[in-house]
Image (cartoon, rainbow, N blue to C red; front, side, top):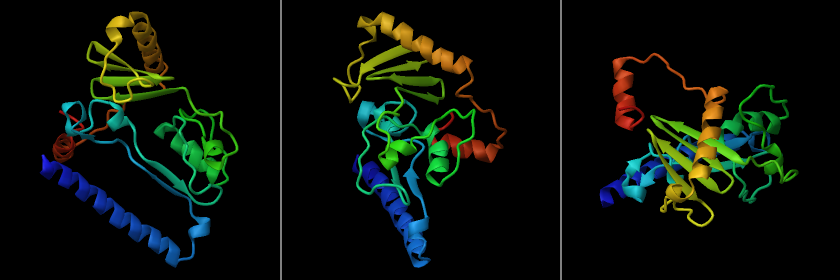
Length: 212
């Protein structure tokens, strides 16, 4: 429906306006050359793909793929990085870009070399996303989604829109990727937090689709 597309366009315009205010404030202070700007999102939105309207709980590409724009000292304007990147890598990347040393024991690794153009070989081969009763893992060009006890497997190289589930014809690959998914959970590399929230917070989270 058009009103949903208009609502999404309105959200984009709102963010664009306020981001512009922030960037202009940095310019007025003459701090542009000393400011690292990182623009990203925690998730995307389904705009009628996979029969979902403004949803973000099914971990398809339209939900997992988010913008990541980095500008500032040590970066190269206009570079498009096609390698796989992950939000879990943001913290160590930012630390290194501002001249620090990322602490050991982090889940993510720095991708500063990719951004600075000094290292083209550090892109990860695996990415994991965890939602409510759903998990997705991407290894190379394959992606496995586990929802409850069911699996869906996609070949992103030939089917980037994730429209053809090939799990039934590749049971061994499903088993292998599911095992890798469980290994990461068992290693506690992607912990699921259980914060205490009050009823007002629960209503807000439920309205936004984060909980049922």
